[in-house]
Image (cartoon, rainbow, N blue to C red; front, side, top):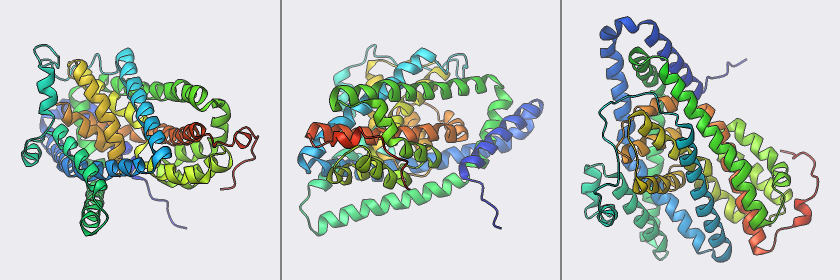
Length: 417
């Protein structure tokens, strides 16, 4: 009988717990072992940063190209894009609002003299202009992530609008191959995550102690409350007022897909069951399901939008920084774009948190924290993303007028997987 392998998420969690325990126990000898833990932890963080820009470039270009392709599919695609933008925006706002209500990072001061973000004395027009790169290579060299994102958006749209031929096929293949390469590199880096997280968490508990655990717990609660808001308020409002269906009945219809998503932590692995539920239990036409479900599993990730906003505010509170209106708008924009562009990458949420920190000018301190508890975030996160896909399909079908409401309102038997 073969022994079951321990998953990477469990290894990282073990590394985090052992790091916290060892750091706390040997806190008095911190000056002796910090040379090892600090060095290894720094190397791990640098490896993460090494992958950020090429990952953004390749993955966002692919994600935006998928959205642009949907636009060409006329009515269905346009309606889905409207739903995607609306739901993703509301999700990011939920994350921001609950972050400021619960304030998970308040009470842990990691940098007493950290400068604050504010809009005082800022020329908003010039700030927007500065987001547009005049030299994309200089943007990459200077690690100007927003400028790289802007270029990636234009590049993705540009590739999708090229006439069919060798040039389009070559560029599409180039960025698909580049994305495959970055996924492989991220896999290699993430194999080192248990050791890196152990060293970083030993440093944290060896210098700060138990107060960090309290902040981390509050951050986790903030995530859950934001997710609950989406599934109890936001999605039902869309289903009631736009799709004009009973949200409780909808959740019953797609419950098998929700459970599989929760347990597997994979939207892609859940896709066949998601499509089956949408067609056979929700009454969405097969054409609509076939068109929306595959790209939705990649770009339609409302939980990730809320998740990214919470990370940004949590880290800012830890370092005593504050955001102005412009920065908050940028956090919402980044949450939507990164949720669409970095999906499907192993440890994608961890990488997205690193990208968000770098973009907002914050240290990557919370990245190993996120890595340590990511399984606890990823389970409800994936379930919510899959649920959002089904809400989108039902909403679009209702707007198109081809939703089979008789099938939707039928009391269905358990799905035969």
